Image 1 (cartoon, rainbow, N blue to C red):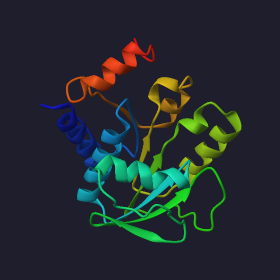
Image 2 (image 1 turned 90 degrees about the vertical axis):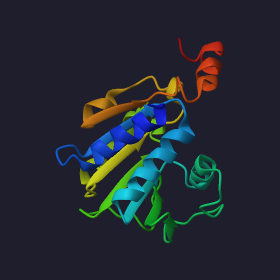
Image 3 (image 1 turned 135 degrees about the horizontal axis):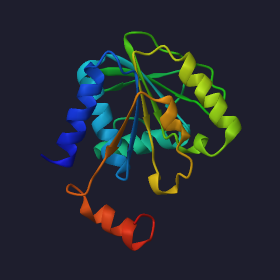
Image 4 (image 1 turned 60 degrees about the vertical axis):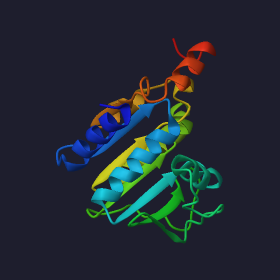
Length: 184
């Protein structure tokens, strides 16, 4: 089974498990994580929310993950977008936005990327409040720059953690990270 198939299986199990609500996705291949998460959500949901730390980068992250232009270069928090069969609202969890939906039983919420709040106690506290007040059925936190995250206290606030390994599917990333000293 490929790394991607393992990730899909783990994510689909999480999405169908009514006892777990918040998932943290860790791993080194940022595009693969985002692509698998959105693809799996597309199977289970019609509506969702993407909360991002950077409105200016989110369309690039999603377009690069799928290697096609799914979103316009500039996204607005007051506009909804189609991703596959899903309608999504994209807004910032870092800055105040006009539209800040908290979701409901029929929605998912992705927080991507999350590492910008992990090392800052004030932002981390606000982030935890956002998590607590979110009403979506499923919440998925996705890391980027995994090797740069020093504080992993976030794992104490989620129901499940999945590490998306790419040892088999993308050994070049792993080799580069080891050669650069980012990981051992």
